[in-house]
Image (spheres, rainbow, N blue to C red):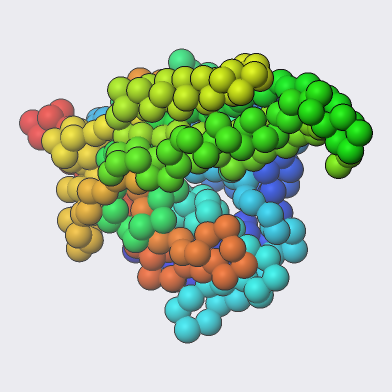
Length: 378
């Protein structure tokens, strides 16, 4: 049913079109043309202004020819660095880059699969419900495009993001909420060699506070990390200011809130005990997803996977995705495994069999949405 040669060529064309976060314009243009070639219109929103990039998000609607749940499929257009000049190499059932760049299967494998699925729907005259395709920008920079999208314009009842690293058949039903944590520490400047005793080193205050706090895995649901610290003006000046940035994540909102509060209290108490002053800023970056096996969005995907010989695996992850934002906007949404491996490295690759399988899974989800609709069985 799938034209694998066309699928691979389409994927290679996509990855060969650079779209590093903030510079997605070329892939946007490619997708607008790809939709037009299929008699469809892709509409760009104003997210470029919000994310300070070349492109906004793209939305394409495909009117159905049969009753069934309206389904949203989403993938992101942007990639990480080094993503310029990607040349895909196809050999021994594997697609990889030449080795000096990423490949970009994260997330262009999903885009290629969606385009191939559209072609199969048309060529094989298959039944399908109303569909919506959302291609976002700035996902790799913190889900920026999805956050800027107006979800009130969507009509879909359930959604699938195609952006998980597991093999096709993996369905992410749990993912964490995440807080961005920022601490500012204020000490007192002095000459480091002449009168250091008159100073109060903000970097030292921050370091002592951090050393009294947990880091890494807190429990099976929860993690935290402080990854950036900066401060001071010169090596011979006692630093009067220090800035610390970190994060906390948990599958449980209660645990996230409790951990964030405890971290902040400990940090501030320790800085103030040493005579300094601390300010804090906490930002919820995205909400948690907690789906159940019998939720419709999960049941439909699992049934579709089984129908094409894939074994459904319901998994949890410690990372966020556009699914976090879509689900938080009120559309039940699961993230699906695409099969991409070693992403964000120059050793990234995807198996041809997985690229084909995720395309077949998309088609199976679409057909299952029609078959399980009560109105389709008089």
